[in-house]
Length: 549
Image 1 (tube, one colour):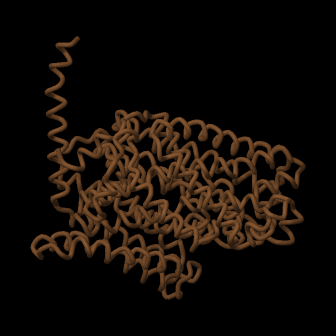
Image 2 (cartoon, one colour):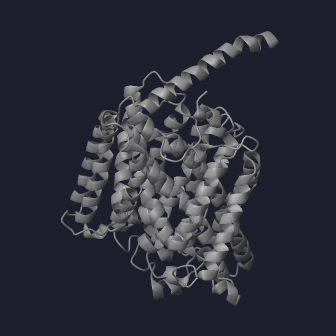
Image 3 (cartoon, rainbow, N blue to C red):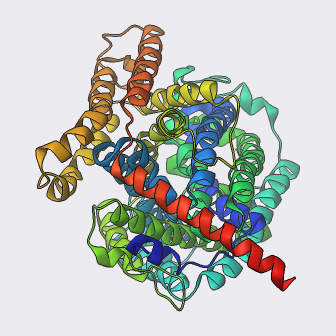
């Protein structure tokens, strides 16, 4: 038995479709619902409703590609493995690094959201937690306590995690639905759609920017969580797709209801004075502030309580899933062996948990505001998305014999569309943020170099050849973002409309290059051998089971 197989034997396959859907929904409905409606309205006005629909369509399309991969390879930390399986170490590492950065930074983001919401309480000590832009020293200290809370909830056992998360998820679904309904009943001013610049006060380009930067990508990125916990899933071929798709669709309904409620509940006097973009400075705790404005003090109290429960539930989930991701990166060969160990008694990868806790503290110290963290998370997330569409079709080409519990006939169409959607969202994120996050991707390359450049050239060469498309993709997208339309932060060298067309062409060209670059690398071959051995062992055990019957 390999070391990897041994570590995975310590996981407990106890999570069914309901528990996995709760994991996905609990990840999607975190701090995003507390701030997302206000931030989306600030960027796009009433057209923010469309931004949520577009964001869900992007997430669902990309999620379909990952559902096939997750069912094929039901291992912990699944999202960091697929690029390595299809393209080897370079592309696999870049995808894993982007994915890990996107997810691990959510943990301090959830803690920050809770503290930021608390700062609108009437007491002086609460107001001192947040200065209007970022957490103060006392705010960071309190957020650090929350990080420790997420950590300890994951330390003991996966069964404790599942029971705790199921209970929290029920609360997280009920409270947003209650909030949307109560605000709509208290005040529903349809004239707000016409005020302050109309339906699209900042133009249609702002709708696309809202998808990328307002927390919409941040929110829907939660669909990854069931896939990253695939090693603990019962019957992953059926339960994973149900959990991934179901959680996105349920969350979309909730988020649209909240967005509509927010848009119609804003007092007309506030809107006339500040406009949609100015409400962010006026409302520290957007939904709670509106509840108080319309005399719903009971709802404000519930929201203040949920400002801890919802983000804490999501932080707890991401603490769990990122630890599985770290284990996956270690098994890809890019971290020390200790981070691949899973505690035999609890089924929890404790060293990986400790690493993520340390990294979360670093992010909390550097990015002290929910908005700044949401932007970083969103762009890094989109970069990690592009490997799914390429990997799923690459593996159909180079490993057609692998059993696929989920196999959509339309995937040859879905995959390039998903690649295009991901590239468009990356472009919509605006320069220079796109360039900054791509630079963060480069920061991780020394770790890859430490493990890979010591290998003989003959062994390293095919990994470089198979992964160069992804390096080139990031550089080209950075250049297009810089040269693109001024409405997306660029220099304006590409005329409106033509910039979108250029991004679409680039996405499809790199999709074709990526699929053709895939090769039967050692990680794929080893995984195929493990899967075959597992199938043979299962087949050999069936006659014994029949004898017992």
